[in-house]
Image (cartoon, rainbow, N blue to C red):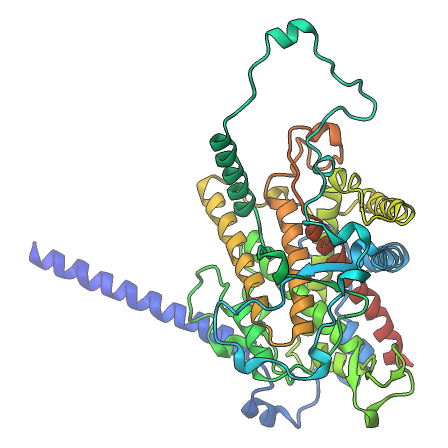
Length: 513
């Protein structure tokens, strides 16, 4: 018997050894595949070697692989380009100049919950945010508590074509007494607040009004401020490295993070090809957001007086010189400089764009009824009609991202969904660690916009019996809850993605000119 136990123990030890060796080989293989050519050793080693893309122009190298299917969606890149550049971009750009969407309420002075960020503060003048004085706010926002009117939450009274229900005397006599005590009312309010928090995918600023400010997004545009270095790189490294769905920490060791010449961290995209769909969606969404922000920084690059090119998108002024920088875009996305991953990061931008479009389409029955109230009746009407115009285009789009296949499969799926939500909640918290105030503003806005999209897609609050049907009548039992800030962030997030896709076309033209 003892001999048999010894044999079994020896066998178990050998199995563990084989598993360990196999795992080590997988990691070694992945590290060789994903190691960036920008580490000092590899850069020197490969410096004299010709590019695998030959002598192709920058435009060809950056865009030759950005064609065909977006992957994980039934749509291709060219179709998205056409939809965005011809229909969505001009409309969303115009919409975001309206007062309802240009003023965003935010707390920019929260303490970083993960590390001491006092030393990482940006002192450059271009990092500062210009606060909107109270007297310049639209009348409808001066005393707003950011909660949409109850009519806009659609608690589903009679639909427009229905007669209101007037109870008869018999109905009144036989009705249930619906009055409740103050204590019970407070308990219900607590339950509702708990439900709202457990369905949220991003941190919502809940500080007292005096700690929050309104920011005019047109006066404080997203652009390169000069904020860079280890403190800036730490943000993206934390976003990727701390939200890894409990995969082995070995896989996420530093050598598997691509570090380009701009020192920005990305996760090697080939590592996630075999991931389950839900986890792949998470990383592609984060990567798409990262790519979009990098395009914005390349599109509105801060030049010194000596570097100003002939053509600047913003013109030359005493406050700074911003304009498109093809070399900066090339540095961030050229496959030669990203170990071949740049085009995939751009493809993830298209994926995120489709995900965001689907969220707008799914929430269309709610969004079509938002009053867009600012106190100016004429502009509010124009804004509401502009929102409906965009939503009509979104609803007519036939290649929407299909979220209905996600998180299906019992308790394990429920656990994965909550893990998915908590990971993105964590990403939104990291935005309070950004040292550049203007970068923090746009980071918080875009993560709230994406978080709102994820809430619409996955919280269940916006589900209808048929996920392909945008029909208010079929969704009457659902209680929609979005704040004004969430609506503003949702549309501005789409606007940023739309602007990025439009910018790719401009960089194509610059590269061949």
